[in-house]
Length: 312
Image (tube, rainbow, N blue to C red; front, side, top):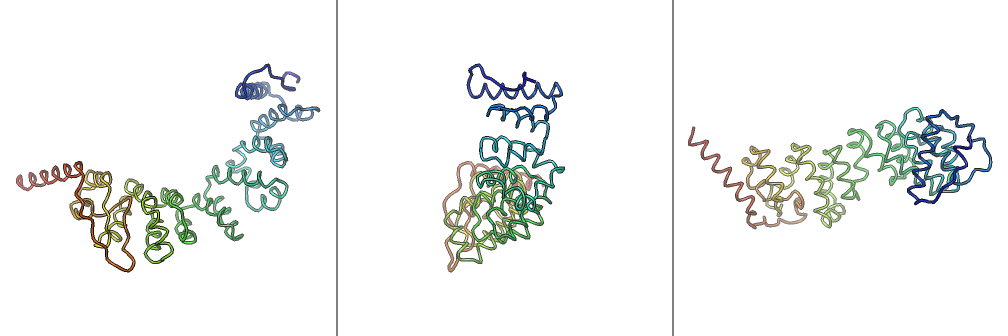
């Protein structure tokens, strides 16, 4: 047994020492060492304890990992939290659920450890139903800051039905993350912008950042992208232009859309800085010329259409 612990280093950097511990763990696994035999040994050092946590993690020893999550030494807590299987494996759903955590485990953990564990859970938990349980729990507790992290892991239907609770002060980054999974949310957001003075002011201050989410939709859900542009940007009150990159993509991938509304998709509105209808007035449409790249593309498409007509 002494070949596994106590562990002693012969110099080396911190990285070298970690590799040494990891190798000891692999050796113990290969030799079918029984975890309880090592755990029962007395006089373990900090390094031996780290080895034990790593070994327990590889063996998926739930009891020992939970024991270390309750420790007051964040070194041990942090190492135990690396046991991602505790979060992702449905066999441990009796532990990783809001009721057990809030009533049983979290009261025995330090606040810093609780925060770190919640962070690990909403990063690694992918199951939509389990994420919905967390979302509902923290929503009912009025802890919307935590709830919103789990909402983005829920099903599209849940996201669409619940996102209205967050639209008043949704950040550009969160909007983009949500739209990656549920592009329809952007339509709800823009609709809120047009109806709420408060939301409109927030939107106006970070317009280009909010519309980064719309850029994403152009390639993932073009139908929704075009619906948004044609509903909210196809008017004299929309006074910005599409970016050259967006127009080029539309001309190359969606020619029919471009030629149906060249004044809109040729640069009369903006995917990255599109203005929704101005509140209280009508703004002029921008008159700046297209970029050289766009001009060349337009000429090419015009020539293509002329050739088709002549051939006909």
